[in-house]
Image (cartoon, rainbow, N blue to C red; front, top):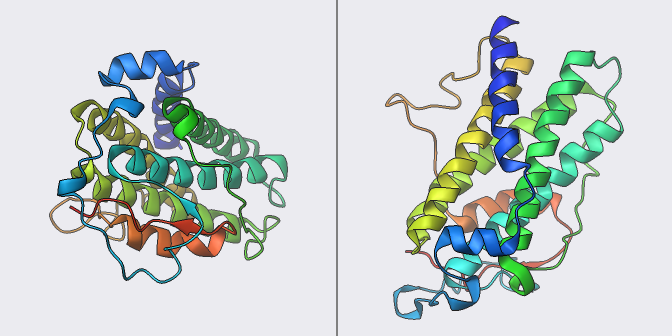
Length: 236
């Protein structure tokens, strides 16, 4: 439990940074360039024409704005999930678990708002989620889903980093993925005490996984009703 408390303290410290109200102007100044002014780097972006189920609907866009919208979509999903968990906690949830899940909820909502403000008028619409496969009254169902989302989030940021052309965007993404990794470790620990960085999360080289946007969105699709078009995202 001592380690859990320590983890919570780290989460709260991060929350102080990420839950601060981030004005769009501040983000753009931080990033060094406006989203609208970012070159789409079309010459360096290859389009994947063979992505069944992800080639129609809400267009994430291309270049760096497309990757930011991709992250925004995932943060919408995570935020909606944890918000539902906190508003309708599973049966018999201990107070400390509710507090920890509330912290994670606050982080995910802060991430979501961060991207929304950064993208401004270029942000995609609010997505409609599908949580019909989750039993929110059951601890195992909730924590198993949380583990899926957190692992997917870590892999998503790791896989998208190489696609970003703007260094400051990459820096921000690195700060967010470190928080997502803490979430993943905490959820693992709640499921099985001491498993926070076992070999199901980290490989033999001590590295987290990385997935392409298409791989991530294919896995996330079961939880998102809104059709998403990812065909214009960069792949290299």
